Image (tube, rainbow, N blue to C red; front, top):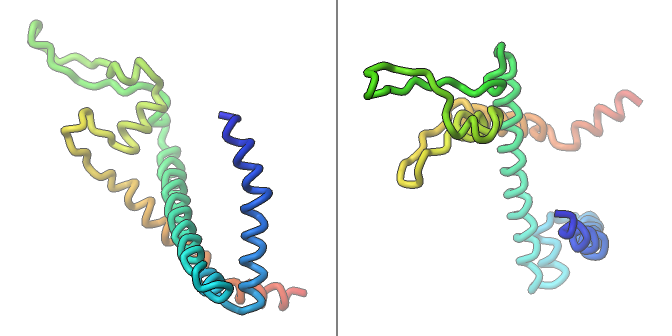
Length: 169
């Protein structure tokens, strides 16, 4: 795991931060966004600005998915007892005794209640690859709320925060 961090930090220090600083400084000087900056520097570098924009969109999407998991767990944490504290008991039919028994799923007893809750209740993984899983509507609503929170945070842009700072000073 740690072997990945060495080339990551080497590339971050010698390539990532200087290109980021270069893009910001040229963009500020030319008063253009990341897509147009590289096209202005050299027409052959126009794809670099598009690539950074696509990466920002993908990272933002991933970030909002993680925030939706946080919201999902936050709202589920108000239950007592916590839903991931113990393995659930599932009713199963015993044909030999003609009775219904409450048993703990093998998957839960083999791993942990938290892993079981994450895979079966939060993500609703299907039992087999041939089966299609259903959408967890609570998690879908949490994702919409995460996007709404991100939208509300950036709706006023950076200019409004500058005005607030100027008024308080």
